[in-house]
Length: 216
Ligand code: PRP
Image (cartoon, rainbow, N blue to C red; front, side, top):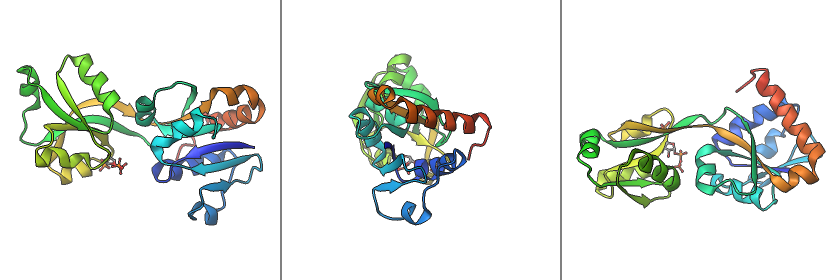
């Protein structure tokens, strides 16, 4: 039996059709249930449902052999013990710097102002600003980042943007790209050796689906 860790939401919704094209189906009734362990049509593969930020943890400790996680999550968790063989091309969005519409970000950076940036993505933000030589104080938040500049907690945010509607709804604008994001398949390095056959077969089936261009 091999175990694949997924988070509910976009990753789950976009991974299931990929698996289906690879010949692995999940019963819709169990997919919609609150159950956290889901069987698949392949008796050798089950899915477990975990929080997005916990996917690398389950895979790193071998509680899941494989997982699907956004690059945003992987960069925060580090890649120790994880093999990252496939960009699934799903869950696409971008990590970017956003500020209130009236805030002159370019001018603030040019003056060498010390910016306060609120984000859930502290590691990626630190790397981004260090690379540009911009001084920042990073404030770690766990959600609703868009609120921080509106109530004076921060000058700006580093957050994921997909349609841009959350930024617009809160009077924020993107001022800088940090990183394009997509979901990656990750594999426990030990599982790759001890369960080479079923994992290899699953990777090959998924790669064939992606090569055929049959992305959701
Ligand atoms: C993400 C992100 C933004 C929103 C962007 O949050 O943090 O808030 O999506 O999407 P948009 O550009 O299409 O409006 P998510 O819904 O993943 O929840 P989170 O706050 O828990 O990260």
